[in-house]
Structure formats: C-alpha cells, structure tokens
Image (tube, rainbow, N blue to C red; front, side, top):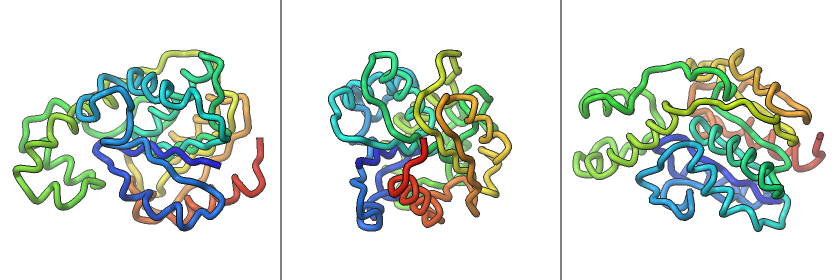
Length: 230
C-alpha cells in the first residue's frame, strides 16, 4: 500500500520522512515542494485545480493500491486530485485522509496572507507555524522563498468549490482540538463529499498536529490499512 502525502502551503516532506519507518506495511511518498506537482514549477503553482490536474497526470498510471493524506492546502489538492482521477476514469485512493482543513465547500477561517506586504506576510507566516525555522531566520532564504510561498497561499485563498459528484472513496477527517483554522465542527461536513464511509477524529493539538503530534494520525493509518472499512 502506498501513502501519498500532500503538505500544507510552504510545507516540505520533513514531517513525513520518518513515517515510513513507523508504518511497516505502507510506503510513504510525498507530493511536496520540489517533488510535488510534476510538470509544473514548484515555486509558482497556478491554482488548486491546476495542481490537482498535474498530480492526476502523475498518478494516472499507478497500479498499486494507495491512500491520500492531505494537510491544510494539501487536503484541498488531494480532494481535487481525487475528483480529477474519477472524472478521467482512473483509479483513485482507497482512503482520503483530510487533515487540518474545513470541508471544501466551506470558507477557510483565518487571515488572508497572499497579498500582505512583506513584513506583515512573514509575521503571519511565523505566527501560523509550520515553516522551517532556518527559513524564517535568514533574510536571503526568505526573499528567495517568498514568491513561491505567496503563490501557494494564493492558490489556497482563491480556491472555490465547484459542486460535482461526491467521491466514491472513504474519507477520514482529522481535526486539531485547538486549530482555529480548521475547527472540528467545520471538518465534520467532509462527510457530504463521499458516497463511501466517513469518520471524523479530533487530535490533541493545533493546526500542525501532523508534525507536533503524529502518533494519533499514524494509528489511524495503521487501522485503515490493517482492516479497511469502505
């Protein structure tokens, strides 16, 4: 079983690197900065829809059963990628783990970052968390990373859900108990987006619980792969 992870805006593969050692029956792959979005410049994504099309191109020939786990912006990209694959008649994920994001038809809470002046932009990025400290601490790295990071926030902030057929796969939504950007009650409506089964789990922590408190997430993945529920 393969697990494709879709990181948050500005995220890297670092939270997921060790997961392969802890998920003995799962091979972890990251569609993330630098590695993600084949066929497109990683530093300048166009939109969630364009990124989903590119990811679907990459996955269209996948013959192994696989899972998706998308966090924050990554949850939207994983969701839209699944929709694109279904529309193309391609195999999709067995399970979509949507973490740290409200249901796609709901507006995302929290401040809008993409259009802020540079100083305010980086202050909000720092306050949000999830950005490597080595990037935050070096002006040259921030300057180099800013266009791509702004583009990823812009992709998230300009996303608008278009009604369509619900997914056929199982959805498991995970929400941080202290995450004001994806409150538990606004993650519950993910159930509306599948004809398959659905579960909602709250995980102790804030917006980046997948990095700060991964054990409950890993346990959910183990349970899904050990005895899948459809």
